Image (tube, rainbow, N blue to C red; front, side):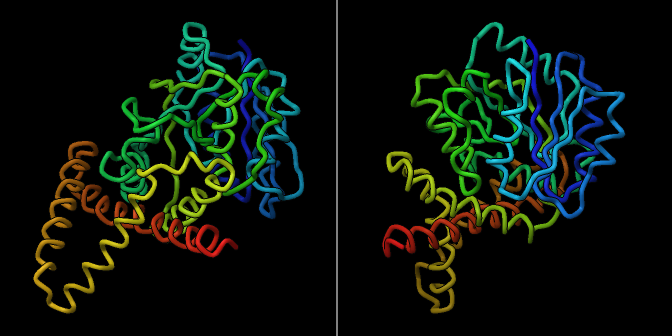
Length: 321
């Protein structure tokens, strides 16, 4: 089995250097790497070139179109039987391709996704953000958990598709705003088999500050409404949870300002949730600092997503703009 690893890149030369280094350590060697620079100003051509003797690697530069169409650009030039997509801010364990190859030979998936985790080298904020994006008390375990809620949809920071999937689907039809989920739904609608490979973990850095993280999750909230516009049946009750959480915070603030009797109930419920986050993160990360930061990250994750969701729900569904 020959893999083609597709990596879209936009103004992140340091990240691609770290990612490519981890790929030189792979125990399974039947793969090529395609780095597609999506109109970057701060390019990484020299960094990619420095790996030419360590990896079967190709570098391409194209006009900026967004990550979805940039992946398509890579698919069209890939030689592999299976295409693997990584975000540039990932670190890849040395047995990743070996794990994926063994699983695919046994289970014959047409498309797969894998979980993400926090590497030991990550900063406390990065570990807290990673926790908030994978915790059962925030995302409900939908991002790479074996017991996720609802239909599993691979996320494009860590996913793979067969060549046949690419040839029949034509790849992404959205370049941003939920492009990976739309693609996954369309793959499934054509009868292809999709599954989670639990051992195919990557270490996903995500964002390095809470401000950057807020912008990212706000975008994710908006993206869920964009997916709804293409697939109305994919807007589930669980997707309203961050918006409900955000409204609950707003109402709780008003009740406290008005000194309403219900304020005590809101404060108690919120306090219990905070304690759940703290002690669960402490058990997962074994760090009081990360557990404390996980509280802030979880607030940002839910409120940021909720505000983005509410914004586009009001604009695109209620007002029909």
